[in-house]
Length: 277
Image (cartoon, rainbow, N blue to C red; front, top):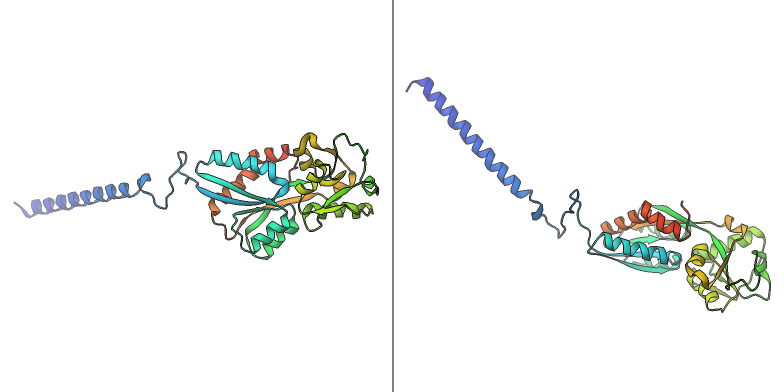
């Protein structure tokens, strides 16, 4: 065999070995990227490879969001099998206090920027809270409005039993703002810890009227009657929402916030009587 032939033979052998090595490496890489071999207990979604959400998400939300958020929670669980939305509804001030004291929560939806600031000032929020809806006050009266209440001033009648939310919660602060704007002074028969408690006083006929949100009047249906008053325009509440910094299930919390702010979520909220931000 000539020197040239031997050189050609060695070249073919080297090329063949290199090709075999590349084929082996490709097969190994293909095996490593098998969708079924992922770690962390999460599987890819059927569309687009997104990771499947799972686990419980704890949402702390203002009492006035009870009906709309409960509906959105059911929608979320249906859209993400394997998840569970647990709500803690109450006065925004007490919810904020619980969060800053270390209560395990993923999401906080407040009825006012002031109570949200308690959480952000404590460095307990993840990112900047976003306003997702607004709400306005309305006078809730007994069905048929037997006392013929037509204005905010009518609530100052000493013969009426009127209930307000405590001034520390957003609905109480808004009521006080509306009263101040009109120059009126009102002494209620009681201050309630949240808007649902104030509304229930009228529902149970323990009060003749209460200053609550229009969304709560709407949710009560025929159990109360709502009366609009112009001063409510001076006390519109913005509702901010945020993921919390120490959220036990941040990924699911973010997804719930996305639903709230989505077109689908906004439709549920506006149908409940909220207005867009």
